[in-house]
Length: 203
Ligand code: FES
Image 1 (cartoon, rainbow, N blue to C red):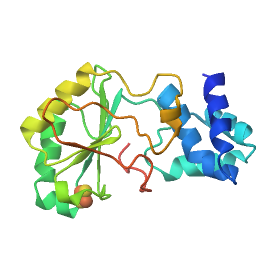
Image 2: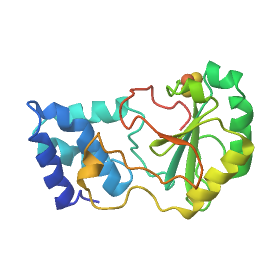
Image 3: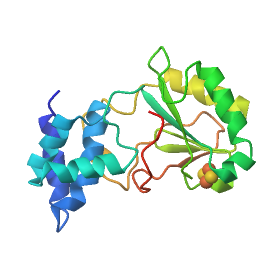
């Protein structure tokens, strides 16, 4: 599916803000992922053309940051941290609970297409709220089975955060697209694109 004209225009507008077009690669990848849900090789080529950069630079960036998806996944992306601090606070039990609740293995998507989940041994940078997981671009901390149930329930009812035409918020790293919390729930913003991590090993 070709990248929409609106998104390509937006990418060029964002690129004009920076002295180097390379600085616009991440916002451009976000814009395409926001529109299509993931970034295909063809879309990376379109980004390269829009930014007048070699396609290899776009591909290198997309493959370096684990938040960029290169194939279709569920409407919502859930990554649960099982690094040592989270593990000491029960991450393994929470991961097992999440797996049972979703009924699919690590790296798989629920049958209704709502949620793709992964575990990661890469610290997600919120050890103070361990055990935690990242849901789309939000951190969900101090997980318990009850909290996981509430989050899953919420996600099953919510549309994907991608699928809309690119907006200024979609390409502006200062304005992450928030998933609204349920009433009374404590949610902190995830680092949208801020942390480079190794690619998830279990895809
Ligand atoms: S170890 Fe899980 S957020 Fe740091």
